[in-house]
Amino acid sequence: MKFAVIISLLLMSAVGWSQTFQAKASHSEVSVGERVKITYTLEGSDGKKFIQPTFDGFTLLSGPNTSSNMQWVNGNFSSSKSFSFVLLAMEEGQQTIPSAGIKTNGTVLQSNKIDITITKAKQGNKSINQNNSSTKKSGSESPDLSANIFMKQYVSKREAYLGEQIIATYKLYVNAQIVNYANNRPVYNGFYAQEIELDPNAEVTTETLNGKQYRVATMKKVVLTAQKAGDIEVSPLEMEMVVRLENNNKRRTNWNPWGSFKDVKYELQSNVQTIKVKPLPTANQPANFAGAVGEFKLNATTDLSEIKVNEAVNLTINIEGRGNIDLMAEPNMSFPKDFETYEPKVNKNVSVTNYGTSGKKTFAYVVIPRYVGEFELPSIAMSYFEPKSGTYKTLETDPIVLNVLKSGNGEESNEMAYVAPKKEDIQILGNDIRYIANRTNQFKQENEEGFYASPGFYTMTALPFAAMGLSVFLIGIMRKQESNTGLMKSKKANRVAKKHLAAANKLLNGQDADFYEEIYRALYGYISDKLNIPVSDLTKESIADSLMQKQVPQDTIHELTSAFNECEMARFAPSAVRSKNDMLEASSSIIEKIEDAA
Image (cartoon, rainbow, N blue to C red; front, side, top):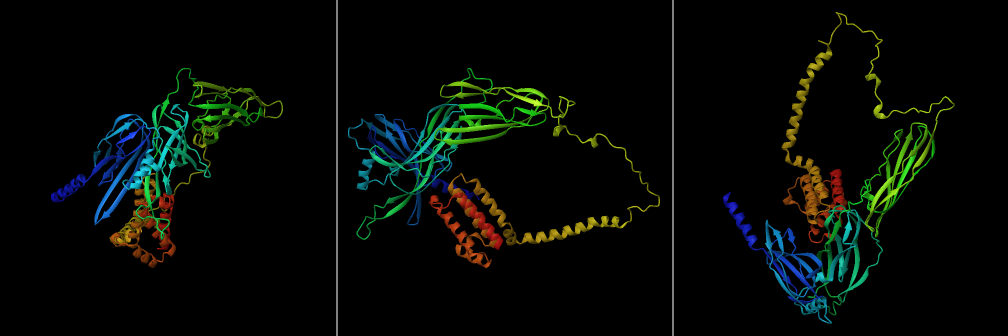
């Protein structure tokens, strides 16, 4: 045991020594207005968390853009992971970029620092992209994807009041050929987020930056409503894409006029924006203020102005405008004590646009007067904060007069109406008053035969012994089945697979690799248990042969094989396979089809 522990520690030590984390700059000297690419490369391990440094004297244009590389050379495996940033030089002088960090194998590795000299802006200065282009032609540097593909986040304002709405827009700048892409769903901590539906037919625009032309596409737009005061970061949008590049090792010839291309997996994310959220002023804040922020209108109507006692009238309150209308609470209502009321029915018709959230929210009350007379429903007041003017506004409706008439016929009708009891007031009278029993008791005669020694008595006596014998018999059958390991695995195969599928369902918004790994385990584990074949002996051919013997349809076998292939492919190019939801549904369907057939 000690020997095994020592060997494990030595192996871990060897792995630790083989790890390196290096920082490199594309240029050591740039002019103001030029770009520089900073790359941090981790060799020999897969880092879990990258700790980004500060870039004083620069503006972050793109990053961190992540890429991975794995290769086998003469039987030796090597891997690396890179994090790159594209920076724009802003301040003249000697700038030092501090060390970055990355967590791996329980430790934090630190990179080296980078010194960059920023000189005055040159007249007629060529952009960093043009300098890189000439470098690539000489063959001294690989293609700079971060200069050709990057993403930027824009916000409609950097300062806002608590409850005020902000529009966040993510734009993708491309000067390369993209084969496929997928993006995540950012989590907006501190904001209530509502996504704006983008027009699928919107045209891609063009934009020139530093003399280079890009195709620009809007990838996402979100309406954010601040939920707390302070400096809050707007999360970046992350994307994974497959980019098609020309393979410079194979030039165009007469026999191959199109040249050769290769597809490269590339990861990038937008910049992070920070919003300063100011608290709402407490001075002159109305007592009935309930958090409404924006611009609104208020009105109240009834469907009838004259009704009979015990009849219902509908009171409708409409709040219309633009702002955090989705989060608006029910207005404070005060009804006459002689009215019976019910909880309101809330309807909303809200649209999320480039200008924020706007629409109408309706509160519909059912009111039943119980007495005759003329009653006044008091005015309804609502206060809100208007960010444009920085002040509180109060809206108030006019009082509503209801004329309640008698419901009886003739002059003998009372003005006071009968009040129908509510459900909680209804009691079961039979539990309060017991009626006098009018039946006579039947007295038992002394010679009347009792239960003892009757057939029922002997049946009830023998029943426990019969139940005990049946239990022993059933336990014996269950133990015999449990001793048959193959049979038990086959019976539990579906249940075990469903656990893996449930785990995959929780990873729909997580890492792609973890999700497809759970799907792979669910399918392979299910087939191994169902067919009683060890996982080490499973091959796609043996699986197909065994399922055909079980008379599983050929279409189902083909679906299973395709799912296996896609799970393996997902480790290298997740965007090339079907979506996670489709894969989860397909896997569950495959298992159900095999269960029905086998």
